[in-house]
Length: 345
Image (cartoon, rainbow, N blue to C red; front, side, top):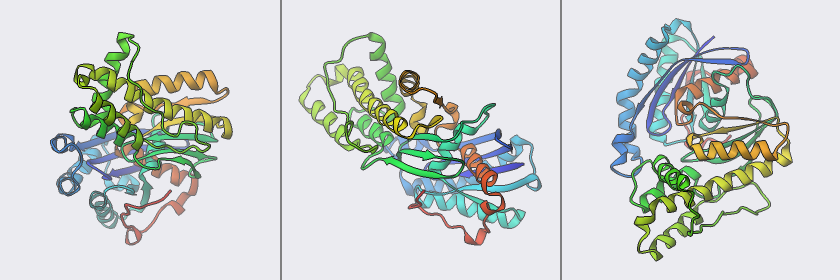
């Protein structure tokens, strides 16, 4: 079956066509109209600008996805669309476009939770899919979650951020250090430069909530600690790679520690990494080595990097596996669909 995916939760207008059967999901097209260059000058996403750009690009992006996949609307089984959470004006652009197409093409809709979409990026283009029970570490600009799944579309949040998500912390830390937006890639670049130098850092930053009895995260205090360090050090600009390395390691070590702790309790067969920060090489490498060393009989799955940031292929995959689990109960009529920025898992 063919699923059309539509994603517009933040600043990416995205559309994808997925060919799926059983446990296999193959991407035929994955088109993204990015707004990064527009928002970079402001150091973050401006919701009103993002919404206007979605209005301009969402339909041409969908059209391009269909053409690249060589699929006609009549061939599509259903349309999967991000319902939330996200920026409400951005979500509305994707949801309303999906509703119109549903009406015109007479195709059912599958609403998709954005975080669930990130998890299902790990099921794309796999010869062997992750096995259940499964533990998902979702790390992005808006979310830091540990989610336990006994089977498809059965979710239990066992850990989440109490304030800022890891990706947001990257962005704000980059702004403190005069670096460009988005912050994750540029901090990772400087951090890797310092890592290769093999120098021992003299700067120290905390690992927030590392020893708390739960699996929750907190990164707001880490940003504050970085700010105080920068204020004390008059020569911090000359030590920029070191500061980036220490900041990145504080986040990575916290994420890994909580994941290992949760895995020891819940005993999953698979651990999956998801979200925009899942593209970070240091996180991927250190999480892999830690799981291999400390967690037996558990396989780590890392998504292809092109499916880590916001994209529609992951939304199509999540929509398909909802159908795989629930059949026609996954479908809703277009009159019942509303964008929701406060959507809960």
